Amino acid sequence: MPPHSEAAFEPTPETDDHALAAELATAAGRVLLDIRARVGHADGKALKNAGDQGSHEFLMAELARTRPGDAVLSEEGKDDLARLEAERVWIVDPLDGTREFSEEGRTDWAVHVALWERGRLVAGAVALPAQDRTLHTVANGGAVVSAKEGQTLLVAPEPPPGLLRIAVSRTRPPEFVQRLAERLDVKVELVPIGSAGAKISAVLLGDVDAYVHAGGQYEWDNAAPAAVALAAGAHATRIDGTALTYNNRDVLLPDILVCHPVSASMVLAGIRDVSPGLSG
Image (cartoon, rainbow, N blue to C red; front, side, top):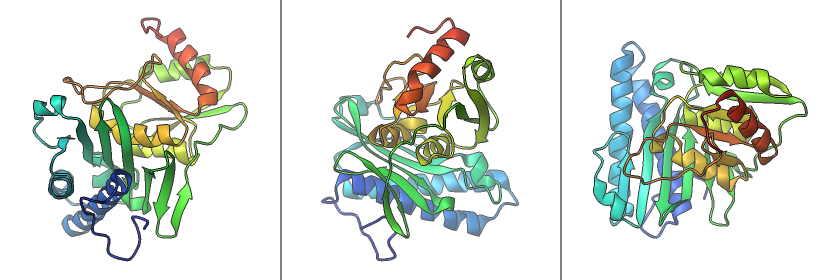
């Protein structure tokens, strides 16, 4: 059953991890839309706080009910280092893009729910509540977009010839990305988008061709989008080309590159050229 089905969906301990991630992210998105409507946009700080807390409490309660034996790492929760000994850890960002959430009319904010198991990401979902769709992994190893109309296979699209549209932060674009744009042998357009989840979703949906970030993130900022990107056949690594790793003691994960594999070597080479301190 698609997460956006009008029929009631009550996840249980028997629900598979991919479906659970998708349903919880989607349902948390509905919680956030309700909060947005109820609190309003007059006080942006109050709306941000209400959104962060409301979505976090919902996700923590549902994970405790459906996966009581699993650990959870949430942006809004206290980090329990017992997770380092756990075999399964849910990594969640209850509201990715609080600034955009607080701005009336913006749709580039998200909910992230990912599952790390024994050293790797195994499931993930990125809900875009104001766009009424959820991108998520599925049990066969691929990824889909779920919306009211049903599910559509999600496969990272190739960029158009001679053009690379790079998603960057609205407020903190990496300075080196401008230098990278000047170095690459294609026309580059820098496209400001809000949350990390919205940016990576834009890559997977073909609205942009790459996401390059080096301004500081944490594991919850990109675990779920990276899980979906990898399942959809995209390239997703650190900007030096090394693998993204999760459930680390230090949850800082400051940089990421997501793009179609056909662009990866060109972009990584360009990043090394403009950031000579990087190893690769």
